[in-house]
Length: 132
Image 1: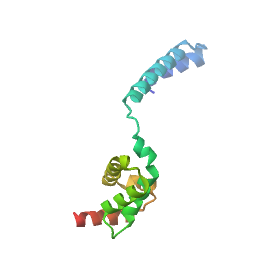
Image 2: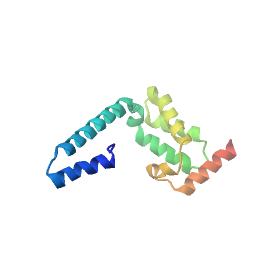
Image 3: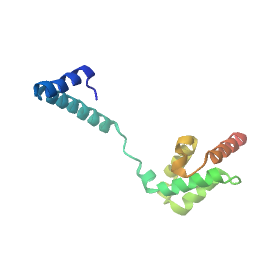
Image 4: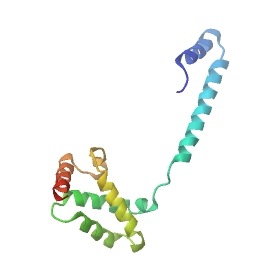
């Protein structure tokens, strides 16, 4: 990756036709150095995961499932009920925000994470539009 096809082909030809590995070695070392540099750049830019999200991930998951599937209760009431039952008071506000944020970006690509179907998501989204 990051090596031109021409340079890579010439390096391979050097190995196969001339039994010389120097150019292929140099191409490999340069690509490895570039890759390592990119890795450290990406690692530096990553944000540490939210400890509350990790600690309460199953409660968050179950609450989102319940909200999407429950046609009768107010979603905010369901969130507050789940938080009272399973989250220390000091973490409730942040965990509540996480759940609300997850619900606001819920889409087809996240259905497997929650074990939801497209029809459940569509019905929930329709209920949200009607209640807004």
